[in-house]
Structure formats: C-alpha cells, structure tokens
Length: 108
DNA sequence: AACATGACGTTGC
DNA sequence: CGCAACGCCATGT
Image 1 (tube, helix red, strand yellow):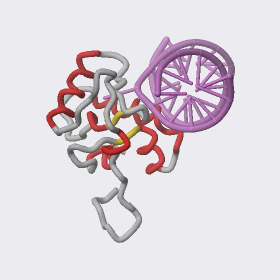
Image 2 (cartoon, rainbow, N blue to C red; image 1 turned 120 degrees about the horizontal axis):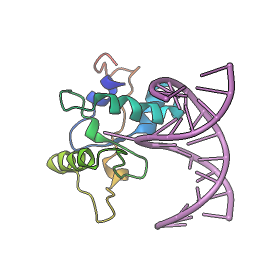
Image 3 (cartoon, rainbow, N blue to C red; image 1 turned 90 degrees about the horizontal axis):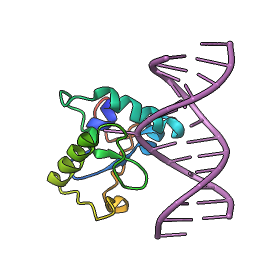
C-alpha cells in the first residue's frame, strides 16, 4: 500500500478506492485512509498528500492543519484546487501502471 | 463477542 | 449536479 502510494508521480493524484482496487479490494478505501493516518507525522517518504477521495477533494478528518498542509504540498506540485476545494481529478488522476505487466515498476 | 467509528465509494433521489 | 442512504473492512472500546 505504501509502495503504491510512493510511486505516485508528483503533480498527479490518486483516490483511496483506486489504491484499494490495485491492492485487490475495491472496498479497501477506508483501510487505505486508516493506513495513511497511521503515518501521521511528516517523517515518512510516502506522498500521502497525493491521495484524496473520489470527489477530488481533501478530506482528512481530524486535524484541519494537516489537511491544509496536504493542500499546500499539492499546490507546490502543481495541483490546484478551486473555491470548492476540488481539483481536476479526471485530468490529474494517476493512471496506475500495469503492475503485473512489462513495465517492471518498483517491487509493488 | 458485539457495537460503534472512520483520510471512503457507489447508487439513488 | 448536489445531498442522503447503504455498504465494506479493520480497529478500538
């Protein structure tokens, strides 16, 4: 799960559901969020800020400050949000690579 | 062991 | 297109 999140390129986004699907469980979205919450601190190399909900907006229940940090990081990477706090998910959603195909991506 | 809660998703209205 | 309800899996009490 962290590996999948790590290989999300900067400037792109992904949803909990997508990660769950890649992991094999379409309904794993909640656990994905729970797992990311486990990271908590910034002492991780996992770009958790690139993971948002299917609506294309930041949720982060809990510390609002952390949510603001996420939005800030995304803006730095070129991901802009509108007044409604939503972004062009349709355009920025990361097209997951064929993990089991020729690409030979990282050991996912 | 059972109930309630949660960084969510999808379908229905 | 926006809001509400239901479903899912794992964790905590």
